Structure formats: C-alpha cells, structure tokens
Amino acid sequence: MNLETLKITIKKYPVGSSALVVGLIMLVALVVRYLDVATLQEAHDTAAAEGQRLGTNISHAVQLTEQTQVLEAANAVIASRLVNPSDLAINLQYFYKLEAEAGVKLLDTRPVDARSGAKAAAKGLYTPVQYIVSLQGGYGHVLAFLRQLEHGTNFCRVISSSLSQGQAGQERSGAEKSGGDMVMSLTVELLGKS
Image (cartoon, rainbow, N blue to C red; front, side, top):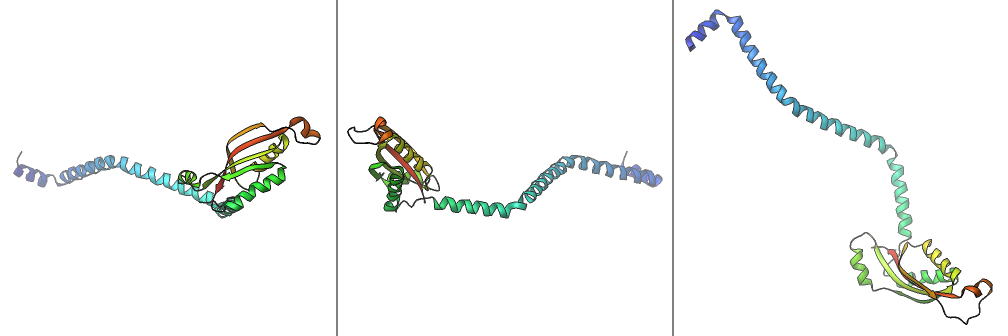
C-alpha cells in the first residue's frame, strides 16, 4: 500500500476514514488519560488529606484563645517560681525560711560552683542552680524540711542526700527524746531563669 492508494481510499470512503481517524485520536486520548489517572488520584488523595487536616485544625481552633490564655497564666506561675542564679542572697534566704518553718538548724548552706551548672544549662531553657545544704534536727523536723522543700515556692530537685544519726547529749522534749537528732546532707538543684 502506497500513498496514492491511501489517498484514493480516503476519497472513496470519507466517512469511514474520518471515523477511523477520530477512533485513533480517542484511543490515544484514552491511553494518555489512563496513564494519568494514577497521578491525578495521588493529587486528589494529597488534597483530601490536606483538607481533612485543615478541617481538624479549624474545629480545634475554636478554643484556641482560651487555651492560649491558660498557657500564658501557667507560664506566669512557672516564671514566678524560678530563682535568679545571680541573686545568691535571696536564694540562700529561701533555705533560711524553710529552716524556720521546719524547726531544723542549718549547719551549712552554700552554692555549688556556677560554672559546672552553666555547662548543663546550655541544653535547656532553664538554668539549674545547685546548693549543698546540711541540716540538723529531729527526724520529724528533717522530714518537714524535705516536705517544705518539695512543696515550696521554688521548683527544686534533690540530686543526692545522706541521713545520719546526730550528736547526743542535747535536751529534747517529749517525742524528740526517743528519736535523737538527725543530720542530713543534701545536694539540691533549684530551677533558675536562663
């Protein structure tokens, strides 16, 4: 079949030739569309997932203002309970206040070298302020001091502790006579502002 024969056949059967050309064009379009369906389906799935995420965000955003206010109030409470690492006198005063409330005697209270805490502080938002605290008192008073420390105004963490029997020979009243004095040494870390 040559070009001349093809021209004659097209002129002899114009409707059939046109139908054949249209059919071939439709076949090519169908193949292209079928190959493109996977891409279109993926785009549809991505758009549907994004729409679902946005819908969920919108439904959860209804209370966003109230939740933001609650978080800001909580952050203000946390900020008020942080110590300033440079205010050594105020930080020591905290331990003296606990001493008076718990009825113990502070034997030694001193800050740990601030340079060692600065290396650990680089990892977080807050600066740990370490103190070594030694105290003496009856067992109940020592426990009261620990409770005051735990529930006090500043956030704290006890790093290490040791408890031992104290010196005898001091006059004590009632319940204190049987237990004797206890000596406790603590390494305490207060949460400070960075």
